Image 1 (tube, rainbow, N blue to C red):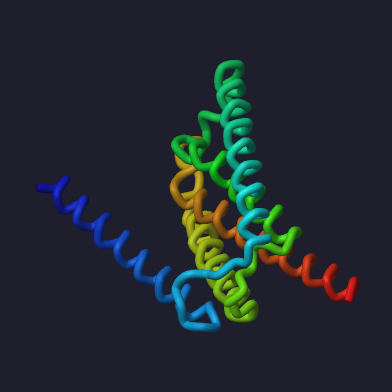
Image 2: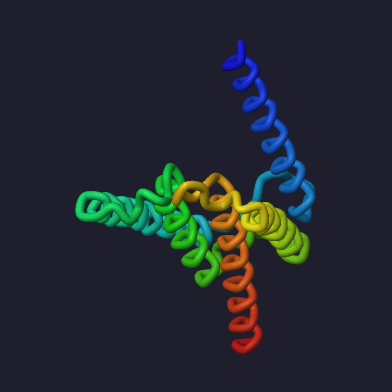
Length: 174
């Protein structure tokens, strides 16, 4: 019975998060549409970025496997270790898309988008800070689930800085 309850709770949380993302996308886009529109050039660049992100995930996974074979330093990450290559791939994809003008869609309101990213980052970093204060980030020498919040919050900060740098570069060129 506990397993069924846990599955129901996980399903409910996933449904709520999915709904929140859908609503956020509708609010961020200028036309109220939940899908972001890209032109042909942006689609091509995004395809290339996916390719490089895929290879970066494969390479970072290989590095982690070799590290695991020849050392035990990564044991402290616990299951969080599986998310590191995913985050590497996301950073590679986002970076390529931002600096080749393929990240922000044609119908995206950049101000709302930046506010949304800031709030997501703040939420995740707040959860990580709480875990640090409560001594729950590292237990028995292993990182706990709030470590993912720290990674996610940091990812959104990197995204924000990349967007700001790109905006400054574009202003300088104009």
